[in-house]
Image (cartoon, rainbow, N blue to C red):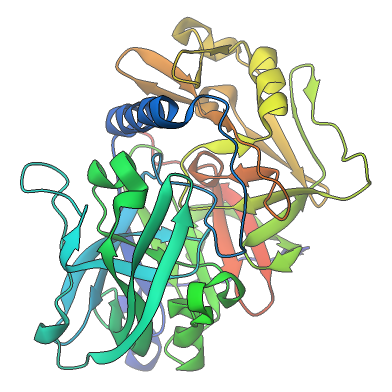
Length: 395
């Protein structure tokens, strides 16, 4: 389904009554070198602790199918009155907001990975809740308790009475958190997968009528910062029209893939006739797929497995590397071969990773490697995702 792009003008250029309902948050981009080093360090540790054949099990529907080792984009959010600022990953693959509390354990140290910590005693808008919070990640759990306070997005969009978690122990995220530049996570999935069933920040923003439209949009620049827009989208950031596809279900932002192909590789259909599933996930930098399929795809593009479990490719061959094509609802979305590679410290990392998630987990995760190529619009009420070719930021 295609519609003509509707302009969402810069908030400062709009009338006052409208400008407060469409806001933008700059997204800082961690360098490729730092992201790859962090990813490799976390994976080496994981292998030493669990063995290379470890398989995830989705034990409950609020288990998050990642550990943020390869998260690359983060932005600012404030909580409380007066506001306390935190750097968070705006994550379409989860649904809770959490930040470390004052006194949190395994929450950074004075020498590296120092974290901002929430102090409810300093907030005049804080309300106690006290219910336990625990969320499972691939490497373990993050735990704390729920509280309520005001959450401020982009300085002037205030969600009041928002339930969020004060995390007391973030040890379950391991090195991914210790080395990361983020303090917490702001989930942009659906309330159906929220721990405790608490409404998400964006759902409350809709209910409190503080966004113009039930829409948020991501623009991820190739070589620079990205931008997250709440309440609309920015047609200066993409070319042509948006093409929308319906969600399979309102849990993750999960869609059906018609196919995946590259060179002589073509992903097989599911034997039972069910759709190939994928989630569009801003909290994952790489693209993941079933381990067997990623091995075949890597071979088709000339990538080889490394000792870290990642695939690398000869940097001299990038110009001849075949494109990777995802077909969604009849439309082909092409990732040029060279854009499916992350270059860091003289190494060319193939930005696809094998991961097997048993049902109800997805078969594929379309992370930032995909979203950098396609401006992505998430419509909460219509339960659709729109894609359009992103404007390049390359010099």
